[in-house]
Length: 148
Image (cartoon, rainbow, N blue to C red; front, side):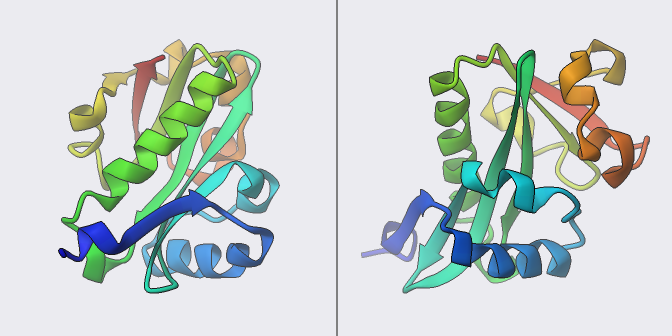
């Protein structure tokens, strides 16, 4: 059995929030506003240890994929891909028309998952009002989107 097969992806629980925030901080990712959307987060666990997370901020005009993080020791095992797939499924279940994201470090990762580069101006107003767009991510961050 490989290490990847022992990884469980599941909805985040309220008591996961401190570990998710610590993982985000340790990887230089924004934590602002995460707690408000923790109910729409998924986590990855190996042997009970939280090793990854991703969350969805839902708005009437689209969704924001945020907080995709995998511990450094566990990268390269498709954990990030699996987390994103869960968020895409959640966004589809919520009937969101598209997912958007901002990244300063993973612009090459997301196109492999169906995301394409877009401009900030093309992002719907509701999504652009998020903390990620208004304050948490720099203007230099790449913007990507995926139609659902």
